[in-house]
View 1: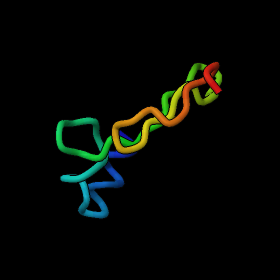
View 2: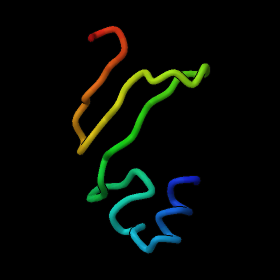
View 3: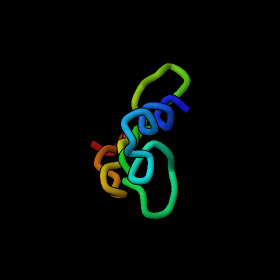
Length: 52
């Protein structure tokens, strides 16, 4: 929701702001302690905790 509202405000919600086919796939997966578990950029895993 935080991403989509901002994308709508900037009028870029057709390209980003939610996870959908055809949109940019840049996001971070976090655990309950707000630590990054995985980072995905352009649909590709760039970081995965425990594999560095």
